[in-house]
Amino acid sequence: MPAPHNPFKHALENGKTVFGCWLGLADPYSAELMGTAGFDWLVIDGEHSPNDLRSILAQLQVLEASSSHPVVRVPIGETYLIKQILDAGAQTILVPMVDNADQARQLVRDVTYPPHGNRGVGYALSRAAQFSKIADYGLTADEQICLLVQVESRKGLESLDDILAVDGIDGVFIGPADLAADMGHMGNAAHPDVMAAIMGAIAKIDASGKAAGILSPQDDMTHAAIKAGARFVAVGADILILSHAAQSLATKWNDTLK
Image 1 (cartoon, helix red, strand yellow):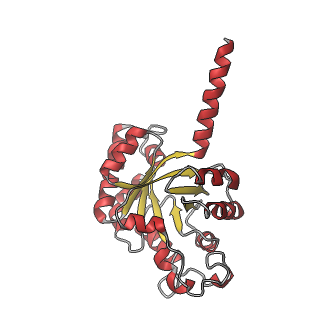
Image 2 (cartoon, one colour; image 1 turned 180 degrees about the vertical axis):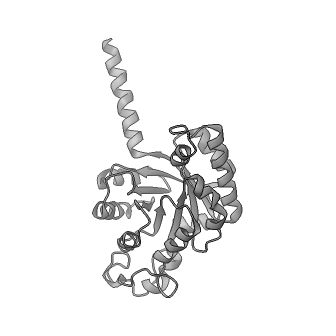
Image 3 (spheres, rainbow, N blue to C red; image 1 turned 120 degrees about the horizontal axis):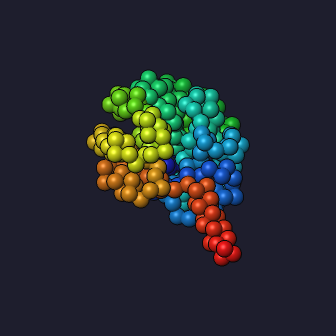
């Protein structure tokens, strides 16, 4: 019995464009709700949300019943943490702040079993192998793991060609907010210089044969990114959806008293 099929990875390999949303509320109930919305993929965010291994596990469990593929963003590209997240059942990992090819090569090793990588061989105890039910997990897991890296600095853009040359990287995500800040335009990812850098990077990633990704709640940027070649596209975040709707509702009714 082989490792489960990764629909997200194979959609990207087949050149499809898939739409997603960020999960930052760090709660399985809201994650389950978002899984009913119809997104192709959902990011369980461990970098900028109060998630830990157990809350990530709980969200992986509830999303298993949905058609939305869970992507786990780890807070940092540490071997031990990636090992735990994979054993918890994640098949797609997003790693922030990748600035060079050496980092990318280490991440490939982290998600790959020996002899080519250094992922720990303890799958018989893991949820990923259905607690030893998937006897062939160790032989088949590598081809179903999807590794996405975030390039979100000027240094990362300078190393983009080298990162793209690393075998085992399935996609490169451009982080608009961090890139804008690093370019001296904090809070203004729509600045012409930032936009030019983002779209140029996406076009280069797409031309390399790897999948390009982005998160943008701004429709203009999203359309431009898709035109440039982005194929895994996040169009919002649960926190922003709730916050903006709540603020709008409060303003609407508070204004009736003025």
